[in-house]
Length: 464
Image 1 (cartoon, rainbow, N blue to C red):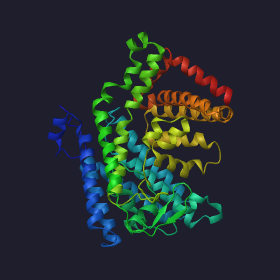
Image 2 (cartoon, one colour):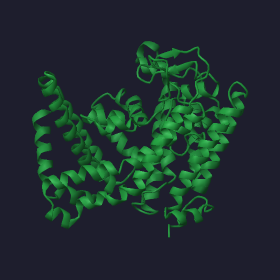
Image 3 (cartoon, helix red, strand yellow):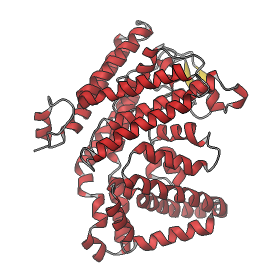
Image 4 (tube, helix red, strand yellow):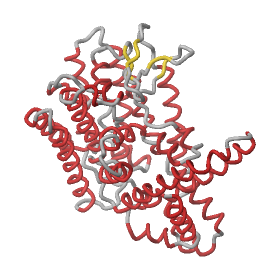
């Protein structure tokens, strides 16, 4: 029987028992499916052409808080407390320093909640929990604080093109602020979006002004509101396939088997490398499911339109969080990171990497580790990620130009770098999945893995 441990509603406990899944996960999936239906209703009956922005803000906020309380019970009050105090900081501290104050408070509040969850509640319980939505809210709070600082304090010539495009020129109202952080479309799984894009959507300007996240410029479109139905249908199909893969295949390929004593003692190195890659690949569909469903919910509400491609086809990827094909076919560490958890990568770039005064790569990975939580495995993964990123960048810059021509040589290079990238990524994220220090070090000390670690260390020393 599935566990009955939950901080949220137990109304769906019979369904949890029937499908043999934890009640927290059942609550999450059912609430996201409810949010999908609510998004269709929101776009149909509360369209910006029929309803005031005030009503759309109120409804989006109330629905979001209802879903939060259903999933997490009174722990959802943390969402309001974090958002409310952050708003007070913005008002009281002033535009000169409030971005720093908000950053410290929001990240500190998140860390306290994560420490409480890990060391007071079940250690290693990798299920839905209230700190997950707080991670997204923390991104929104800090992003908006920096965008207000850029728009109301810094001079335009001091800003990069993307900062200029995202800059907020007026102080948001309390309703706008809470609606942005706690709306039903993104309260449970995000993804992060810019404040300007969200307000444009609420006010009905999103279909006419789509902002490019790459250069910060706004593109004007005079066409009628594009339909998201095709994009939503395609994303729901991806969700279905990802969920099916997760429920059937993923459980057959546990990452923990990589540290099984018998497997490590008897398997050959090619077998170990193959299982390492396959087991980590099998761990990804649950993220594909959650993030793609979250994207589909926003699209169903009419949010996420980026503009039209060269063929006049509507693009609904403004806030998409991943590109599965590019992830699975990545031929470099950077290509993988650029297509995995895209909105979080943009957040790290905007609030840390672009503003760091020294060692931006190290600072960015460190911030990512703190934001993810307090499990030691996270820090091992991101420490390794720093070395891998720097080494991969050096190798690519020094050797890639030798393999550009002819096409056959380029194909050979791509195949080799694909295999190297997939194994390296898998090696890097094993501690992220194992969470604790002991199993992570057991993995590092395993025969074959030790040799790989030595090769990586040698490459880092030679190339950096």
